[in-house]
View 1 (cartoon, rainbow, N blue to C red):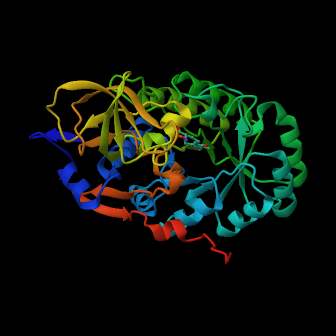
View 2 (view 1 turned 60 degrees about the vertical axis):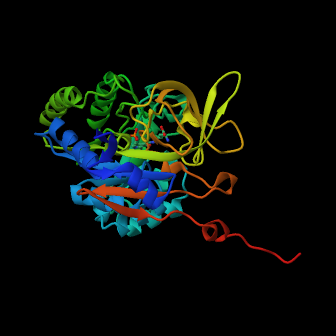
View 3 (view 1 turned 30 degrees about the vertical axis):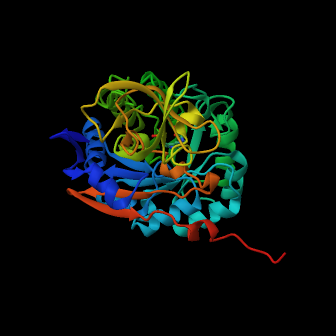
Length: 410
Ligand code: LLP
């Protein structure tokens, strides 16, 4: 988003006009930024057979997936429903990795029928898989390397107390099950968490996976998951993808030389591809001065962006409507009837009732974690593509709220 002639725009599309046309609150995504992120990953790992599997749980609109497909990524899906959206978007099932947790074996069978690549994170499921398919359907194994990483305990997945993956300490048991059932393992996978500050974690995890990989003869790929840290404010520490690319490429190439085969290296970025590409624009309904603070109450809230209340995460904000106003300190809150803080103690250009507030990093886990709490409607979603605003989801109406309610006679 740029400020030009005192007006904010994305690819030349004026934000205030956009908000007027589609109403607030409104999610807006910048396709150029998404494409930039895909390319920067490719650049960082050039020279390797690198595959990007977009973690669509971050942003699952079918039009975003069509864009990803056009940009040449694959998909990481965690449910059969996500897989169906991906297939609708035109992905080849072979380019979709299905990595569920705690699902029944029936769902795995459904995924096999759809032709997805299967990632298994549980020995009991692996046994059922082996019993049913033997070596006729290849699979990937999700290893839990026992590394504590991630920006918040709720988004750390690779530690010893986590429900994810098959423990690296269970390797002997795992190999017994694979051998006995003649299972064809084509990939190894790990994902240790999200918002990982220390890039060393990836290197540490990679070394653990290389050690494990030596036990498997028919590997095609190793999937290092994701967790790349993006910027939530100016000057934030982020994953230096180029530095990581250099280090990991070297150790990956060395491993492939030793393994005797050029394997593919896979990543499953969610936030890295879409977090900074998205904004949530909301209107200041009210300004309320209390003895303690000045609240800006906007026409949005934790029902549209739950991350601040759920993970204590920081989302930068700006006043789109008054870029030259005097800076004042505000707490920006939503309209949900419980504590619903989007950001406290924020320095914003003076906010007047009716101004548009832009909330950053709303591309990942914003719409996809939204709800109808308080029976509020979900906003529309807009994709800015080639300098034009495309509506990719309509604003909800009361019909959506009533759709599955069954009114009984009383
Ligand atoms: N691969 C797997 C197996 C995952 O579980 C996840 C995220 C990803 C890839 C993508 O991670 P990312 O690149 O987005 O860090 N709702 C939380 C994040 C939950 C992440 C869950 N798994 C948040 O808003 O911070």
